[in-house]
Image (cartoon, rainbow, N blue to C red; front, top):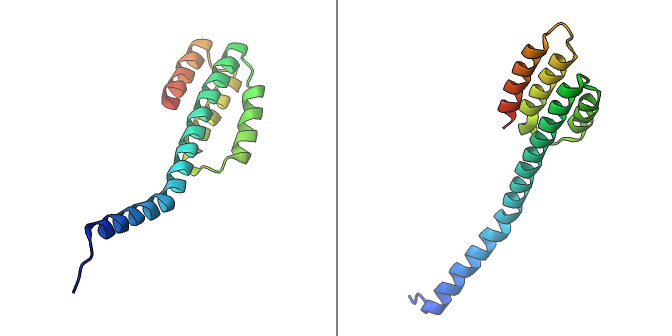
Length: 113
């Protein structure tokens, strides 16, 4: 039984490596893109939450939240949406003192990091 030359073995390994890359590269790229979108979503929400707190008005934040929630296909962003909902409730609650609002919103922003 003949095992073949070294060049045939190297070629076979190269072909196997090429197939592995071709199979897993799209998965890797999709995962990277999903992570990037999730990071961008957190950054945008942090900015909107800060603006809403300064204006004491969460209308823009609520609008962006609703749109983002409807178009989002990443199940890993559920925690982000939950935190944003809490922020909206805090900002819209006029019975909470401004100091308490700032403290609670800062905790939410810290969780979004």
